Length: 165
Image (cartoon, rainbow, N blue to C red):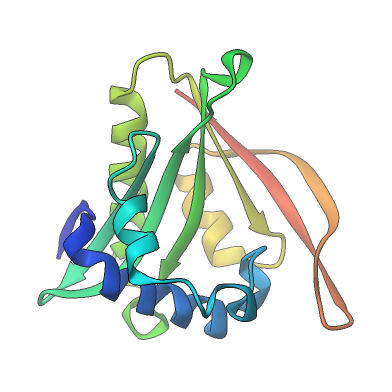
């Protein structure tokens, strides 16, 4: 398995994986497939050139099977923080270490960035496998966002987690 920073050439595959994520795990993301289905490859090409956003991909036999995005805060008083967003591994590829490898790469990148002292993420409270993974890497729960996500008539709480570097 290869883990690397995605670049504009990866935009099409990343967009397709994002659509898969939003359709397979709608409760895990604040965005929805309906909101993103018209996003263009060009939008992802631009995103992968940002200096404040880093998307890493996990590849198995040259196929993109997972992603995670690290986003730097821009406000002066928050520049010591970064956030993990859009963590996803295709269901049939889970359990082979891709998620852990992606997170380790994101953490490594955060440690290399000047001023970064902590990494934040949110995870649906019922997603025990993800919470175990995050905890195993040192993330700690510091709060709960009740009824954070509403999907049709069902609410999902999210655990707020932080890793102090």
